[in-house]
Length: 205
Image 1 (cartoon, rainbow, N blue to C red):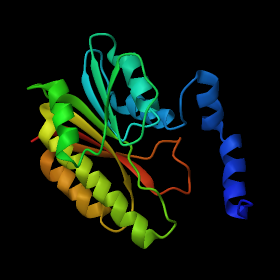
Image 2 (image 1 turned 90 degrees about the vertical axis):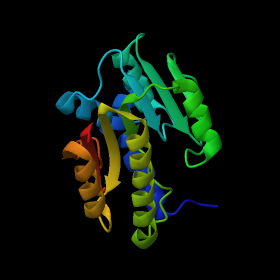
Image 3 (image 1 turned 120 degrees about the horizontal axis):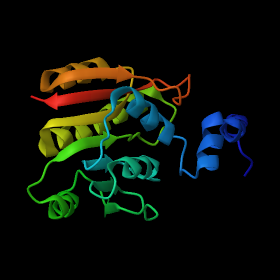
Image 4 (image 1 turned 180 degrees about the vertical axis):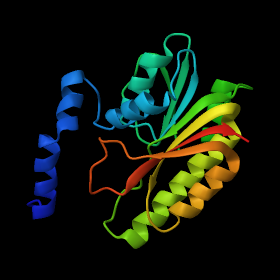
């Protein structure tokens, strides 16, 4: 089956993308690493020795990057339905975090401790129909928010991807009601045509 013109165009753009080329040159698993790197440069969400939860972590570039900063004294747990090739210093929970069995695995790893940082770069499998994709993306962000509320310590930070559109403003208001500071970022590595932004939520109330 031949690829459609749009998928051929996407592949061509992808292979010529400066961040794809940078990721390959620097040995990272995906271009998404540069979104977190820019957030880190501006907001310093990662620090040595932190305990970090990376939701929807596959293929693992955010966990790779985070592990370099938190160091040997830090803890990173990557969680995803999809398999992830091992990353030095990163523990992996394979499963759906909306299911109790997966949460039990997570609790077994963390015990009574709470995370300093919860990251979520999750996005739904896009259908191309906004009426379908937008509610799915909001749902994933809400699930990540629920995890952050339950697993962050009082000074913790929550970084989550949102797609601007129906429901996003209401969710940002929820973030502002639960965190002392909420900043919105659109990293340079986000494609210009994408409606994605990141909310950096600091200081759980």
